[in-house]
Length: 269
Length: 221
Image 1 (tube, one colour):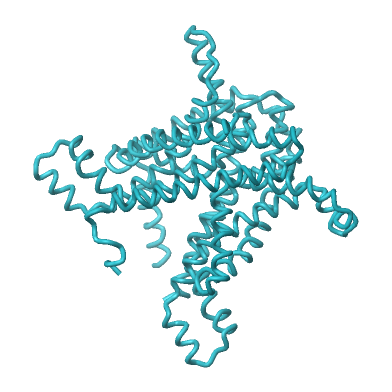
Image 2: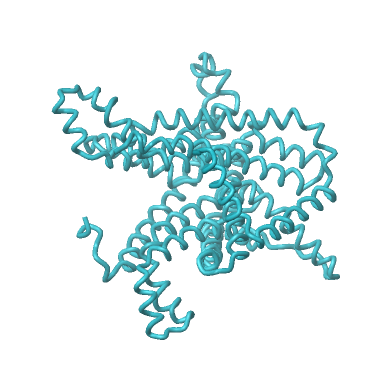
């Protein structure tokens, strides 16, 4: 019975979505895509297959690492702004303003070219264990993207922390929970569920800023497409394929987050 | 300094183009026919899902190339497209998708009764847009549009990648010549920050002006 209803429901939804004008539009789009595929050159594709997959993997890796690290920084930044004294809140506020007020490309180049040109002048850095990493480009990319994510998400977390009803915290205090327990068991989960929808948006934005690391010679999918463009003198094909890949990743991200978000109402109120 | 000027020129131009596209797009999405609505949905989805850098490369190289090919096909001479115009067009196209969504939300936030009242008075659609819809949606739209303006100023930095001379590229060249990377990049950062803070000030004023006569947010709580 339930299954039948579900089938009817999907059928009804499909017929609602597939209106006549949409079928015409889709046919036109398909024709465009097919003719494009026919007229464009794709013979370079097998040669760059492995490199492309490596690039996609690198982009996703940077995205995941910077989002997780950035979120870990964003929590104290947001908490400091929402609940800290002025001496803690002001630096966090300044951090967010600086990150949000300057272009990411500039931050990236500042870290890579600026700090990167400063470090070799100090022997104690040159001889430390960190030097092999500091000579490469990707740590600077990860650092810049992490700080950027922390800056934007810190502001979001401020709102999320402030949005948790005061009564919840008072109730936890009345139960005799310690301050750390209150934060860990009540405040942080509540704020996290509140921040989750914005977190989706921020993650997609973060995905869209990962190609910037290609400008400091980190080989991600964007850099691979630039290499293809330089090698083959083709403009449209690699860029269109690149756009399609990013759209696919965005779509998967949004779907995954909406799955998680669907479970929020169970946990909050 | 010329770089900063170029950056601001592009940001202003792109925002104006984006606002125009956004207003038309929002109207199309809300009141247009099904075909217009679907095409606009594709436009906003695609532009918002693809990184700005990729879009800029695509539109900057492919767009200029396409225009030239079309021109030669009809029998005109190839034209050299001005970098400034191309930058404004590209960023405006990107901004348009975002501002379409902002404007759509803002128009939806207008109390329906106001529009119905205007219709009941016999206002023509143009007059309705000019006298009622635009002023009434402004307070709802300004926070989102302010965000877009700030994004536009920062997106101009991306044009440095395609070799357009603006603040970030100017900084890079100056830093490369003098080898004082850190100082020049820090200075550029301060300049961008100054633009942001200054526009925050102006936008706060603008919001206050647009909200005049409306109940203040503090009273509502």
